[in-house]
Length: 597
Image 1: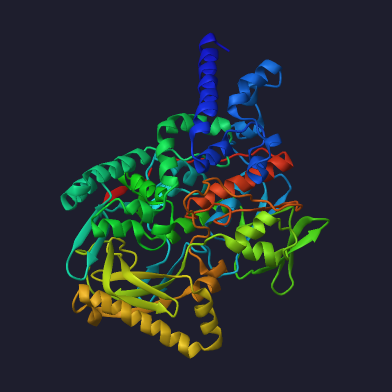
Image 2: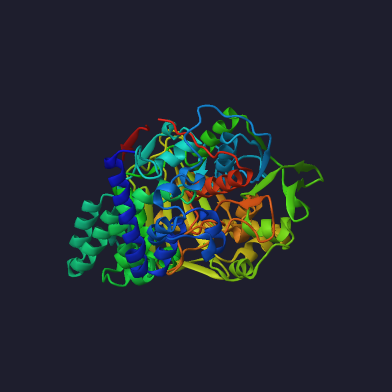
């Protein structure tokens, strides 16, 4: 090793030691937990599982270890967990072991790709007749209706998280569009606020509307610019994969800490303008940590949160193709009823109907509650897990009213939020005072030329009402869906007079629909809500006392979203490889056309 290289390593080690000792002590708890998840030598997964001090060696202690002869920074980089188990393989070799993946949502599919690349035989079992889970769209007549994708983090070639998508599919086949306008808020008496994705335009619009809030607006847009530069850390990576991004992100940590401690609703109180305040307080945005929305706007500002033409299913199809090219297998209409156990070890699964599928490992990318309390009978639950499923807040479920409109709506905003003068009744326990429409004029695959697919999502936490009504009184269930659809169409008719006559397809899905097709607990759209003070790090993905089993998906990564799929899948397969002493490897490929609309 040259003197120059040694000096460079030494300076890195010194910087990290300073960061570990100084930065962690001054940061808020959520950010500190997030960083400590990565600032570990040797056993990052076990740190995530238990946070036991015996499994972790903070960066600040590396110099002490080197002096005591227990290793040190340079030696630690030779540890397989921090090295990612070596360099990229040009060819895969089968290792004779099999992984069964339960669930063909985004996490399950990504887990299959990673497992296949590491030489495992992989079989994915999906209860539905198509892949995607919550990443879904469906055809009604000549129209296709999307229920998932608003934007995809990592859409920009070279941008944050793009490489992770390249690991699981040829993402550069997709065509992305970046909207100029994120959302337009309107009142029924004509007041309008445009929230632009370009932060300079956004700043100008807000200052024009609310010059009295100039200081708060400038602080907000400064935060958007700053978080657009933030580089997400890889939960499946060790120190070697993440240290550079840690150093780059140091200036961002105080801002992250501030935004992670406050809800969207409380953050919006600093603005006197009613529509701007409304943007931050509306629905689950108001409950979420303010970090979530500001970070999303930051990604949009740098063009790294585009919408892919064809919606979420276009991404799902690419991952399915990758699985097929690697020799993997996906079985549809294969509902898993229970895990097969021998001596506290999962040895396979039993399907509805009695068929048994044996495996060396099982990854559950299915609903978390169903997995733990039904497939495993609640036998491997500690107090922390039970409390989480009993008490932690979920994202709301939803009704979606989808409309096929025989009209060109390209002059309308892609997302329109109407503030109502009187509330719309969703169900006996739910009223909403605003209704948001997605107008898909920018996706030519969703409607014939000259026509437009339009969707409206109405949040509700009254899952039991809709699920029971469908089972007990199908007639009333259909009438309730029709009532909600007519109310939504009435709101749109006020905004675009005459549109009712152009509607040729009406489709309504409910929380019962979400549950029937995905099995997702309470029909939630994204699992655990990230509230102020919650940690950013993934949750434990194994269960106490249970071997040969690991979980992936939104029940492991609070906040959900499509990126949680590859993030948690990679974490799961890397853990399996560690247990089996198998070299973990990924393969990335070369860049997608992006247009602004």
